[in-house]
Amino acid sequence: MIRSFLKSKIHRARVTGVNLDYEGSITIDKALMKGANIAEYEQVEVLNVNNGARFTTYCIPGISESGIIELNGAAARLAAMGDIVIIVSYCQLEEHELDGFKPSIVHVDKKNRPKEPFAPPSDIPFLEEDFYANKH
Image 1 (cartoon, one colour):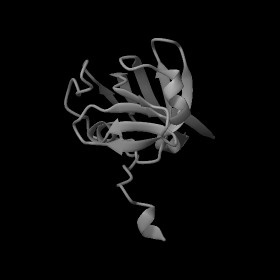
Image 2 (image 1 turned 90 degrees about the vertical axis):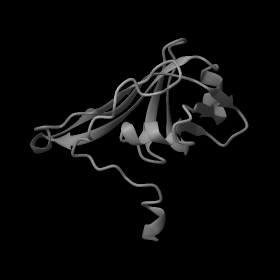
Image 3 (image 1 turned 90 degrees about the horizontal axis):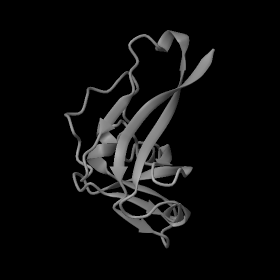
Image 4 (image 1 turned 180 degrees about the vertical axis):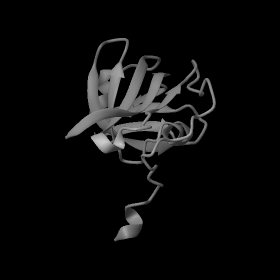
């Protein structure tokens, strides 16, 4: 049986920008993406603590260690600068893959900097930038 599990979480990040005129997605500090084991273009769910909105989009990397969390396109209507959001992604695992599995969770401060060093990733590999682009 395959079940869905939390794979990655960036906990209580602050929205640093909204860009309605962009095509869509969420821009996330590249270092936070790596620490949370979130790949470029990976689907994420964004949970807005301030207004209760929950929506699905995909990630694009922002400047590393900048603290950027920017909602783009239609998602920009679902948050305001300064809102607190939780960004999560999920994975599907079979029973034999559960032993030792732990999600990658990053807690951030008010400036979207990690509160503690990143934990080693679980058995789910991080997909390097341009992983798919080089396969064509």
